[in-house]
Length: 311
Image (cartoon, rainbow, N blue to C red; front, side):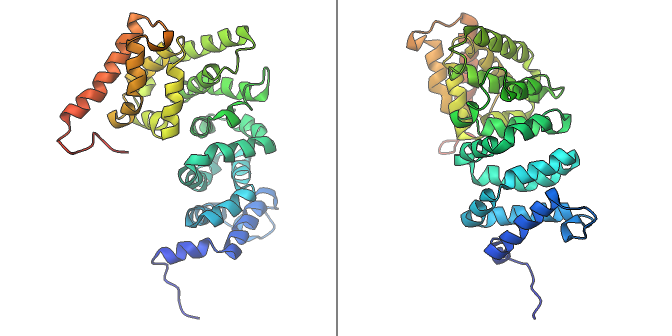
């Protein structure tokens, strides 16, 4: 046969061919459950790295290939590799990041299904490992809609223990994300039936967000505000009078891109004018004003006809 030079998109589409997708799914199952001494190609040196890169290509190739792999439980299988050996996180991330990027609009559906099939137990293991905590926190924040949140809200359950582990993380940005996740449960009313749980949750959020210096990391701002759905969630947090000053303090340090922040400028203005019957402190209003000024100054600086920052 003729030599195949992988020089264009066509080869990525070949990775999405049903027969190749099945081969990769089978390789992943073998890597998770098979005998390391069994001689399968994925068990060879660098087999895991190669498989994860091929999976990334297949996941990126087409919606059909992605659906097929998601149905084969690709998220659970990849995270199982990390459970066994945390050094596998870098390999697994190659494929998982493609899912996060390509399925941003329905990531909550994917993660919710993963959690229902035993994913909470997997995350409970991963969150005990420092190296994996920030990855777990980011994955949850990007999918933190009601179908995912409800699986974390049960009193005394595994979900709350996972959030507590993130809050206690020695990685400062991870602790901040853990606090934002818990704030999401508070703002959504998940603790309204148990006032004492709400009080305790707000205490934990306040404790964590009272030292927001790590939020100045540009990568953190990107995680916090990068996705449009994340901005909608932040706007929801600002509607809670107890959470608003804490979240505004975090945003003042993170200084997200003005183009992103402008999406919630209406919420910031509402805080300054005490709209919605909620009375805010002058300190809270001052923080909202500082963020509005950040948005406004970028609009002034931008040349006419140009947008104020992308991405």
